[in-house]
Length: 223
Image (spheres, rainbow, N blue to C red):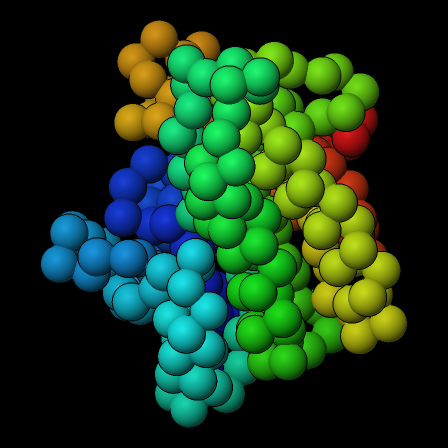
């Protein structure tokens, strides 16, 4: 019996790299989706897949490769994300910056799901890496483009969960918390392991019938 196949986007560093490494340790075949393959330091059991989630042609090419080489996909972790507006207030946010952020953080995961869900069977899992900044129940005023993109990603998660439930594919969003990565910075309170644990819970530990939720550390949190 072949090992399950997982694709993790944004895997060249930080949470994506750690999640890819951990999945390989768990016995998965892992594809690391990265924009710049030459910048990806090798990981045992992990194959680099050129992929830019903001480029529909790149997504289509990656999906065609996976279909031809493997014929299936078991797990998709939409981890790739950008944070461009740490010092921008909402009233100063430009349309171009918002569009650029949405393309990577929200539209990209939707296009990824559209491209790869046809390769997934019953028991497949899609995990969208979101943020507490996207919660409507606790509105945030920092990095408005980033937060709006994660709110949009949460809405996409709910829609995908409903659309794919009849096929037995679970779709969930995860908030890994403020993690000590290049994006989170050295002062973040959570370790790389804690953030990765949160992302991996829907893949490794959640009941396959659980879908359409926002989770942190294996616990459901408010949208």
